[in-house]
Length: 162
Image 1 (cartoon, rainbow, N blue to C red):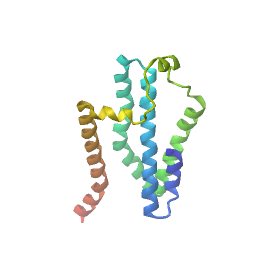
Image 2 (cartoon, rainbow, N blue to C red):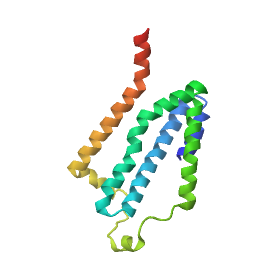
Image 3 (cartoon, rainbow, N blue to C red):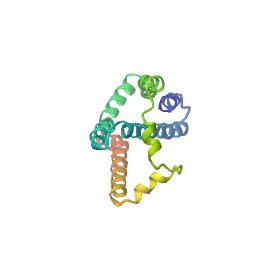
Image 4 (tube, rainbow, N blue to C red):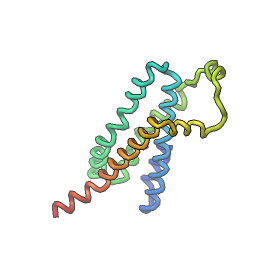
């Protein structure tokens, strides 16, 4: 989804189409992160999961710092559409590798021995466990404010320079 909607963002005909396609691109990115953490949980034993999940979180924490710099350079050198073309291009190789080379990570014998209900909403019950719920709220607010600052920062610097 990230590859497709990044490419479609580059073809957006107006701001409303761009906003809609960016929202769909975000859904794809969210699905990617959830899938990766699920695969890590399948592959790593419980005592090694924390380290693996910590390592996979590093890019999601660094990219909001590095991404605007790279995006700004691409926009200055080419056009704003170049940012979305670059995202689509860089996501294509991992997508193809995943589709054609990644084996199933869930141990079928282990899955058969565990009690797994068919209710897809069951994982949401973890949000009722107070440490997880509080952590989700804090992380949501943290990322929301970070992106809010990144969004309005250029407007504030232009106004101050005037």
